[in-house]
Length: 448
Image (cartoon, one colour):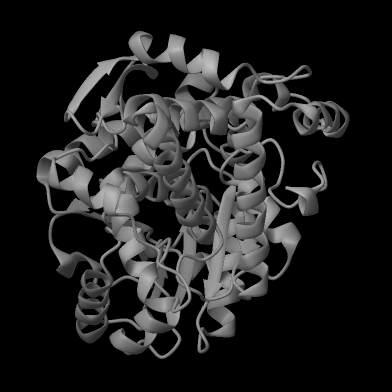
């Protein structure tokens, strides 16, 4: 079956979720572009958007409508070529028709049975291995086709899913980064039995979506979460060290600020945990932990926060829910005090803490600025040279954190999770938007 035919009958499971909606949008656009080719005029393209909530699915169509308009406006030159033989003359007419075609392909449904005619199944439900297996088996046992399964799992080994669902290699790990419509990175993971033609199709699909592919080996957590979960535990460990002297709120604020500003990252480690969701991080750690006998990928602190109902994550409008911090318009306004189980104003914490940790050393360029610099090796080298010589509290913690993060990255290569050091750096640069890879020579690591 050719690429276009294979992609004519598709289902997305968890289509109304944060990841599923992006996957659905990208796939709907790709399918619509294929449908506009003259050689495909006799192929009927159907994309089943499957989720548990009618209300969520209704909101999904509104999301798709808005996003497709933006996409169409950006690629109007291509659309004019695809519409060359139509009687539509104006850009606005072409864009409106294109949006209508994308929406006409999508079939919202709350019934799993809707997927039984699909050649491709994209799965984007939560990180629950047993739920994924149940869905795969149900579809496979009732399908009129012999479907291929694309799982968006960020942590569950593909071999485990393949074996338990008895798919005989008709599954591949295709881990989009959040949000899929924006993020360029995809981690591609094959099982021991993944069909060669499925792998080839996945690469062609990724190329057409203009995604940057990093291949990871089938080890729980893969590269992205293999790094992130351990890096989060490293930050939590530094919080534990700092809190004994300065208390929880100050320690939390300090480690977060150091991992954000001193380390020139997009956000502090605890902001990142909040963004992903404390509950999601705990679940990923629970998935990963049984696979590593020599380490404990688990946080008692995260367990306790969840017991108190503190989950983080985002609201449906994209605003941030309370986690380690409370937010307003994306900015931290309150800091969690674990021992008193309350939030305190960031102003009551920041002044004292900033005096203790100091400011980033000379040469500091905020992440928002340095990420715009294409050749940033020189300013980064100068900054880290100044960090190396600084003996401020913040600099000392930053150096310790950077060394730990580098060790984590090197371990991913040693464990054969990543094929190379470059692959780890690429995931952090492309998927996490870091301004530099964790494996670098900016500091004298043997001295730290």
